[in-house]
Image 1 (cartoon, one colour):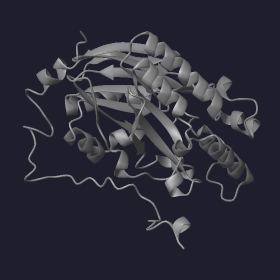
Image 2 (image 1 turned 90 degrees about the horizontal axis):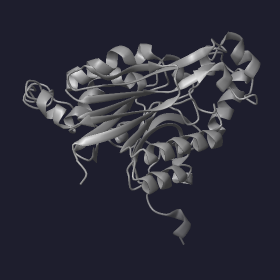
Image 3 (image 1 turned 90 degrees about the vertical axis):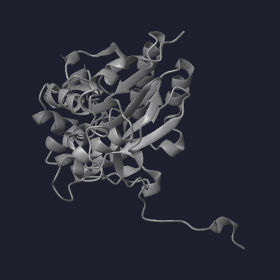
Image 4 (image 1 turned 180 degrees about the vertical axis):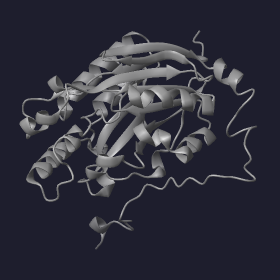
Length: 324
């Protein structure tokens, strides 16, 4: 009999086949197969892994207005980004169902309901039945990311039941946004997923901090990236590599327990499926003395409102195709 208190988590600390969505999907699928064979309940991939993080922006003067280089790289990024409505995650969903495994996957989304030409850094949750249950578009891209990613909305601020756990997730520096974290806490989150493009300087402090603040498990999963991971057919590759360090993202995937202590300390410069099993009872133990949205909260004094409406510039009323 399965112990519903125990959850086996696989952290896929991997590099993309950068800006090549077909080959990156194949790599993602291989790690889902591996996690399924090892009986993981959940596998997590890093921020924007499919098809990759926009590293070129800080290496090629990404803010230069009307630049042919920037336009061509952006067009390449769009072509390799994911439109969920077109079924581009269907194979991954099928694998989730076949392996009875839930998935958190960072993608660059070519959002159909925003016209299909702008990009969003999205965190997709797929349940063990292969169903996409939430797509969280990053609320606020960070610094140079704003040159290529649009701002998201609250539609994806969702939590999901997984065994006895309640799991939610945020992208990268969203994890520093107190109200975004609080929204997930208030929805019942006790397993927080934080995804990152890579580097332990991001995950080392905040993972333990969020765990201590929320008295929840926190799983931080980062990608990897080095100069060898840039495909030779990347537009303007020589210009990108001219200023690129040998290692652009060194990983740093880790897990902290509800007491804020390491279960898996940050692991760097290793491409691997990192596996750990967590026990839900630890959440209940740590909530005894602190619960940020329960007995240690004052909703009569401070309260948060969440707007989950999916934002779009149009609202279609009626079906013009059927008009006489």
